Length: 514
Image (tube, rainbow, N blue to C red):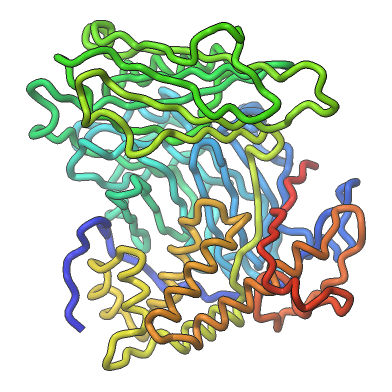
């Protein structure tokens, strides 16, 4: 099969060790309201913790912030997320040995000590430095760390690595120099993925595109932060140029304001000769009102200030409505942004803001078990004359440019397992993957691979059934069975109607604090 270079996704360093050796994902019950689990500790994982059980005082201090998350994991693997920052760690089944339970933490840092050591050799930081730990942790197979980057307007984008603990400064080297690690950057989504077998600090950097950065046009970065009080939410929209000084100022000021980033940053093409930048707050969720109610829904960021100082800010306040029987615990709206006289400035669509104050930090289980993964590997790894094997799956994931490399590694490394890990590690909402599973099933059926589509449909069926039948206050009827073919349960409870087996109702895995 002839392959063409990837147009949208770059394989930055293809030195990947063995493909994941997946282990069974056992059934997991909902956790009771008192934190107990009827299936025992293994059946409850992954589970969020309020702070690490060990470590330095500085580590525990950072654990109180919204840039830090920690959870317990076992051989079944799972996902750990910093939702507002767009940071996502996927630990595949089998990456942790069966006889171990580990505490895993993740920290998205923009502290000076973590970003100031990036040399001119590597370029400018276009992502937070993501530090995973405990420092030096090793895995049986690759784990996937994905996060949003501000990559538009940058060339020579690369992943960098630092053998960094949370309390230390970073000394960056290119990830391509690290044995057994690789990275991928997607130009379309602006998402970067680091694939490795041991924990460290990682980030993406790039060099400003001289063809774009010049004349009347320049790239600026849009950030949205929020602060919550008892009755209101403040949204601050900030635009800044791509200088490290201004970015450091923005995050330093937000730290003083207890601000938290509530969506991934956006790159906008600013025209220094056009007009002001206007931001409007629209589609506020029921239960909230703009404050003051007589105020305008639009704010202006001055072109002159953006040109002269390189950054500006505007603020919106939304207040919970009085007299409601129950106060809302989530806030949603959309932001519309434009620059007068510059049609190229606006994002492709309004920026959706969704704040769920109870679930900003989440853990959830892996989607596929060893049984399903091994069946997919058996079905898709062998190449066939019409090409509807793992290579079509790679094309769907915009990994065309990686096909030749993955072919060269077979049969020592499974291309199907690599692609499944990449797919799951880049899910937007791994705690609610129904739409993505349906899309994946439809894709395989569209290339005449009903056998693979049927395996995915089983996961969808069990998933809807599991979510319908589980309750955080009642014992689960699911059985602990390592031979299960899905990541959700081993067999359907008999008192649930078969019509629920393809239900779209997906309640999400509970966030639990110890």
